[in-house]
Amino acid sequence: MNNKTKESMVNNSNHIQANRVLWTTELNSFILMEGNRKVNPKHVERIELSINKHGVLMNPIIVNSKFEVIDGQHRLEAARNSSTGVYYIVAPDYKLSEVHTLNLNQKNWGTKDYLDGYVNLGIKQYISLNNFMFQNPEFSIAIAISICSESIALRSGRNLSTDFSSGNWVAIDFKEAQGIADKLKLIGAIYDGYTRRNFVKTMLELFENDKFDFNEFTHKLRLQPTALVDCVNVMQYKTLIEDIYNWRNRNKVSFKY
Image (cartoon, rainbow, N blue to C red; front, side, top):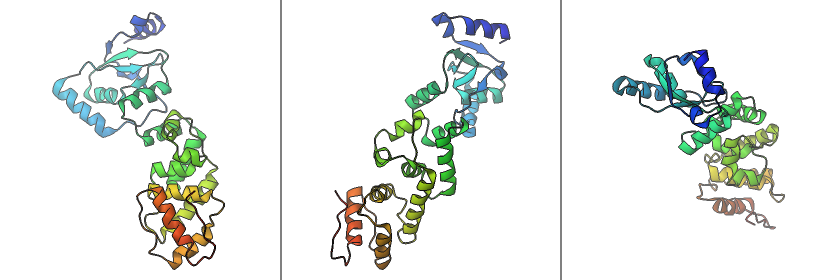
């Protein structure tokens, strides 16, 4: 594929022409897109073995007008390793959002892939989350996102995953997030289920409840170190925490409503 071929392909505005399947062995013409997920060497190896055994299947990669790879970077790397070529289609206006859409529909992008992609693009919120996860490896990425999300509504809302993958995720101040993490770790000295999803979700709600005093709770927890046990949902955790909190208190407090 020489520059003349590339130029004629990209500049032709005919829809059919832009979606023709082409073939090339000049693989250095293609560029891995900044912000795309990292190439998985094991996945590349599997494709490479398939190419060596069965040859190249007509499963074209998709590139944009800059020849950045929108879909098929693993196939491209496998073709390079096998010293063969690739079929490709040019979608001139495609960019990173189309990468995410394609992979979301194919269900082969994980949350960490989106995080790495937005970190590579230099998006501040995602960089801060990545730093938070480095400083708090006890928490899964899902828990870390919940802790760092802007509000309870976002932490527990159904759209959290969509907002995160689309790049529209909003975070709290990360000093505040670290403060929450430190409190959870204090509980972890007594209760080893402190990183459980429903427990963290419960505590995030309690931290925003004016009736909840964290110091009072940890004091009562130390007096009853075996009282806090795993629960199946948030409501059960709230009921249990309420019992622990109200132990030997004359004025009972309710956290369930």
